[in-house]
Image (cartoon, rainbow, N blue to C red; front, side, top):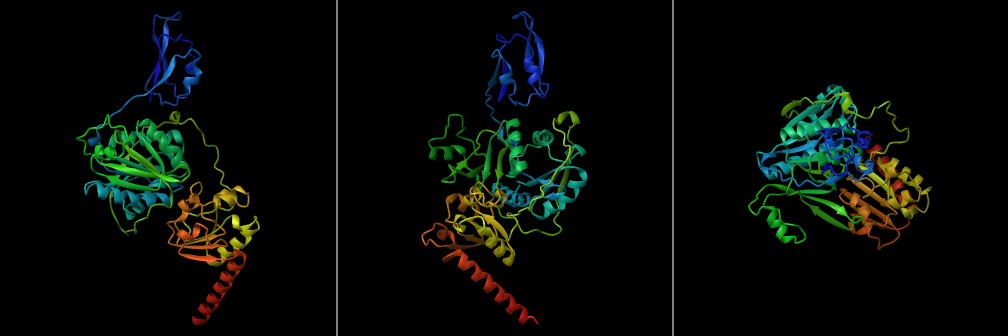
Length: 435
C-alpha cells in the first residue's frame, strides 16, 4: 500500500503534519493554490494511515501498489526465535524444527536460520540452543534499545535484516509478541501473512498447476513457466468449521504465525554447531515512540499449558465453579495442570488463561483428561494432537469420545475420586516394592 497526495485538492494547510507520528510529510512548491505549496510524502512513511482521516479536504488517499517480487532472489527459511529475559520461548524451538523440515523439503541447499533480537547479554547465550534444535545459522540483532520488546524497534531492525538477506520464508510464533510484530513486518515488506497456522507444507511445483485445480484463484498475473517454491499455509476458518489453505504466489517473503504447541520439536543435538551472523541495526531512540517506564508481572497464578505433560480440563459438565476444586485436586495428584473449555471460561468459573481450544491455547501433552467436556470442534482443534486423550462424560454420544483413546461414561464426580484412589493405591504399592 502507499499514500498518495491529490495536488488539486491540497490547500497546504499542514493538518497532515500534526497527525503523522513519523514526521513523513514535507512541503513542495505548487502554484495551484493560494499558499503556493502542497504536502508530499517522504521516505519516513510507514503507511500507518493516520493521515487519511486528518485531512479535511480529501486530498490524501490510500493507493494500492502491485508488487511482483523477483522470487529467485529469496532463499532460506527464517524463524523469529522469540526470547524474553534471555529465555527462548518454547514455540521458537518448535518452529526451528518445523523450519528445518520445510527447508530440507525445498532443497538440500536451503537453510533454516534462527533470528535472535534483543540485548547482547540476553541473546548471546541462546545461539547454542538454537543450533541444538536444528538451526544452521543464527542471525543476532543486538542493541541496548532492543532489551525489551517494542513494536517500533523490532519492526525496524527485522525489516532491515530482511531487506539485506532476503529470506524466502519467515515464521513467527502466534504469541502476544508475534501477533503484534508479524503483521507490521508483512505490511512493510508488501507481502502476505497467514495468521494462526496449524500446518505448513511445501509446494515446489508451479503455482499455475495449483491454481488450475482451484478455480476461485485469479491466475491472470501468474507466470505459467514459474517453478518457484512456495508453502501452503493451513489455518482454521469460520470458527474452526473448515480448514483454509493459503498461498502467497507473487511476493516474498512468505510469512506465517504458528500456534504454540502445534509443531513438533526436533530432538536436541548436544554440541551442534552453526554459523553466527551479527547484524548491526540502524536504530536510534528517536525511532521508538513508546517509552517503557516499568514492567509489572501478573501476581496471579501463571498457567503453562503449552509445556505441561499432563492436563486435567473441566467443562460445562462440572455444573458450577466449585467443580474446579475437584479438577485442581485431580491435577495435583497426577502432576498436571488445570485446563478448561471455553464454556467454563464464558460462565466465569475459571480464568481465560486456563482455556484450551481454538480461542485459547493449543496444547499437546502426554495425557489430556477431558472431564465434563462435550467436545465442540473449537475445543478439539486445540487438544486433539495430545498423545493420549482420556474422556469422562455422562453422555455416551458426546463428540469427545470420537477422538479419545480411552473413554469413561459416567458421573465425573464419582469417576475422578475413584481414579485418585487408585492412583494412591498404585503409589503405595510402588513405595512398598522399592523398600
